[in-house]
Length: 264
Image (tube, rainbow, N blue to C red):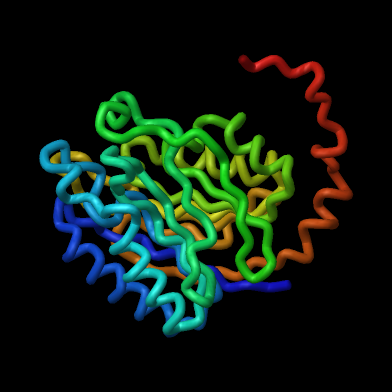
C-alpha cells in the first residue's frame, strides 16, 4: 500500500493565532495540488514556541478552533491531517496538544506532549501529558510524539511495540541543533523499523532560528524527503508493503529481551 505524505514546513508567527490558522490553511491548499493522502504540520502552530506572556489567553480551548479549522479542511478535501500541535487549554491548564483528523474530519488522536523542554522552561508553562497514543489513518497503524519527546526512546518504544508502521513528530527545533534533529529522527525510524515523518517549523522566534530540515524517513533510515531551512512544502511517497520484509530480515521486535532491560 502506497501513500503520499505532504510535509508542510511552516513559518509560525509568534503570538498571532488567527494569522497562523489562516496561513496554515493557505499552505494546506497549496499542498493539496499534489493530491497527498496525509498533511503534516509543525509544533505549536497557533502561537509559536512559545509566548511567555498571555499564553493561556492566546491558546485554543479544548481544541475547538483547531478542530474547526483542520477537521473542516480534512472533511472538505477528504484528506488526513496531522495538525502539528497547538497551545491548548483543558480544565484551566495549558497543554501542548497534537490533534489528528481522518478524511471525514473526525479527530482520531489527541496527544499531549509528555516532555517539556526544560532549557526553555516549557515545563513551567505547559502541563505534560502522561500516555502514548495509537491511531489509524487509512488503516495504517500510527503513533506520534512532539519535538523534545524524540530524545526519549523509551516513550517511542512503548508505542511501537504495540505495532506502529508510521510515526509522526511535529516540532519547533532550533537550527543550532540540526545534527541532533536529523540523527535522532533517523535512529528512531531505523530502530523501530517504521516510516517516520518529522515536520519542523522555520523562521525566527526572537533571536532563535528554527531549523526546518523536515524529514520523511524510510524504515532503513533512507531520506525520502529532506527539506531546507525556509518555509516549504514537499510530498513524498511511502510503501507500507516493504515493512514486512524489513522486519522479517532483521526481526528486532522478536529478538528483544525486555526481561533484561531496567531503565527506571
